[in-house]
Image 1 (cartoon, one colour):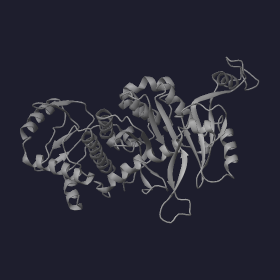
Image 2 (cartoon, rainbow, N blue to C red):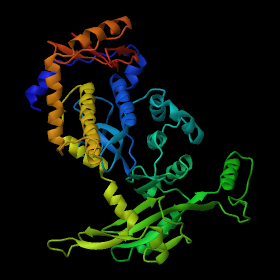
Image 3 (cartoon, rainbow, N blue to C red):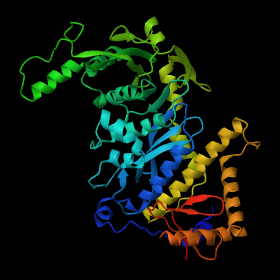
Image 4 (cartoon, rainbow, N blue to C red):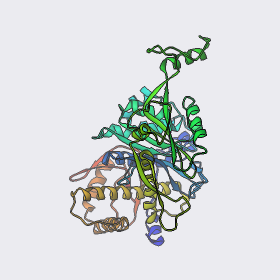
Length: 467
């Protein structure tokens, strides 16, 4: 889209915020003006389609020149100052199923997970059962975003794989996901040492010392541990001052241990050009020992075998060398970059400009991802043979969408529906829906849930009004 054309459309768009009377929310929530827009888009993304293949959890950036507390600084990102949004994206079709902002600058009384659960009330009971809605950490939000996909449709294969980088991977969160989904949701992700829990950190450090002097492409499998419930109870009792003594307690089997073996869960310490720690709950079987070398037959069986990957080792001229690595490592390399690929696809023909209004930046972000999701559904239906259309690139698809919208709006064939919906909307006390192509259209969205009935359909008023 050319700059002049974008500025012409932008001049006809005006945002008015019906819930802006709440002074406290306006002062403490930097994106209060776009909560309704983002919430409606989130509901539609989760209802239209549900991914069944491997899914990636990563952050996305909404670039803006607005002076707002919603922006955060990340020096490793191309957009160092931007609004950070957590996204759940399916790797094959690049469909955005769930997203939510990181809550930067938000000082309201509600936690980030409570704001997400307010959009999906059906998650309130399971979240309250295994954690707390008053938990202000982002881990509860990530847990809720993953559970929303499981709650929508159960996977026919009985397994869902979520891939994440070392900012998100937590052993405790992965075990909660297994418990809440009856073993359906599995996690693969890299790990930071400062995020490894105290029960598993000594074994991981031991494996790092053993592999430090080994050649490249050497791996060690470290069996993961879970805390013993009896030991947790004894620890809580001792902290309250009711009991003085040792941490060790006797479990049902008669052994005095503070931990139990985590089923099909392990850390893989792999030496590439540098040491990489990968965590997974998707092993083929549970290791019988705490530390097993990657060349051992049992370790190979646990990680679903070895897979060839191409790597630069410094001696090649034209082609990379092939390495045999654990299948878990290869799966991480394939599935992890889904959010980045989706962002690259969006960046080819973006609607954004250097906006100083945060509401407009978020609006163009929603427009870009709505088109990206429509293209993902188009590709999926075409592959299944549901629609007899030729293959289209994303640029051509987006151009056709814009052309059809302009053609329909300029024809004015929805004018009668506009006046019928206007009368119905005014009776309900809502802004009247407008039709693009009128002389001076202006766009407006509000937080009312009133529906306006047209001739053959019911359209939810998210606020389009004629000036």
